[in-house]
Length: 473
Image 1 (cartoon, one colour):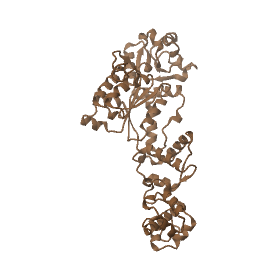
Image 2 (cartoon, one colour; image 1 turned 90 degrees about the vertical axis):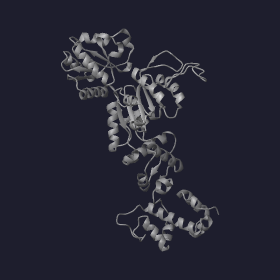
Image 3 (cartoon, one colour; image 1 turned 90 degrees about the horizontal axis):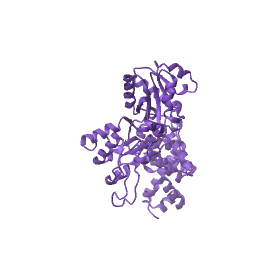
Image 4 (tube, one colour; image 1 turned 30 degrees about the horizontal axis):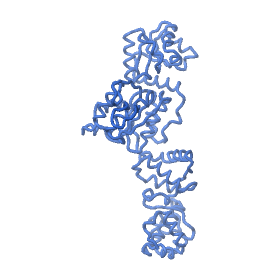
């Protein structure tokens, strides 16, 4: 890949071969200085390995052959290189020089390359995935490790867990961040059209191809191509994709001119690809080509401590779109923590936006949440009159209070304390339900029992999501 070129300046042929093998394993395209051509000055370069070089003039001549592209390249310098001390003492270069012992060890080489990238790239603190839980700290650590390299990444995780955000964060933290990030959902495009979407087509290639069109590989040139839901790709298309990943060459549909591509591949799926391989639904060779660096995104139910941070992040996005931010009461947060979150972070994002629309500038309490998020006891604030009514109510009302967390006497504070607003809300809901039951669901009759206006009760029914229990009247 042209933007992964790594210049190797080493006069010892056997050492040069070993160094190039390791760099190639890490996803780079090592180029020996003896093979440089005039056209190489137009390529993109990632760095220089400096080994057995007798003079600085010789090194400058090699780097100078790259033109302006070679001036500020980071350097991996062999500790036994004759130029090691000179390069370290050069103030104009020492920020981008990393010494490395030979024979090369994978761990040390990876560490040295990451150190160089951190010095020549601006900090990407703002590009972290949101969350400080243990699972998210591990995810952020893996992103930092893999981002500087061109290795293929396979992001695994349930639907809505944030797999595309992982891919975007890797891209934005990588040297390719100034190039395009192109995403395509392989499961959302019919199999017969996916080839054209990926590789493009020539005019007249098929019915409806009225003009030549670039595919996603061309659009992502120099950047990152994100293949979402790769597990839904058809087997014939998997074969074609494998060839492109192996040879970095493709042809447009209806064309016969090979085109080289320079893209980093990040794929994602919610499916278990190993099981799909056993069933014959996914190619094993493609799986191993994609999963050079597998990264699993944890579901939201395993990182509930990140809920406040995620809600804060979604609020910021809402404000940027002109919507209001939303606040959740402690009772509402407790209810959200009890929810299973089958839709993961996407489900939470949708909920925050919905509540921001319904209750702008307000505080969302448990009783305001949609019914499936409330749990067993939807709670909210209630008027003092309702509390008095409850105090004078029949025994079954007191029993209702006990079910909501009281100690049997609603006038006695439980030993562990309580959320007054939430408990009073539960009391009001319990009284409304009893009134509706007594009135056979007729709102007008229930309103008389509660001594409130019918319109007031209708509004409360809507607020607490009890409308289905009522009848017109």
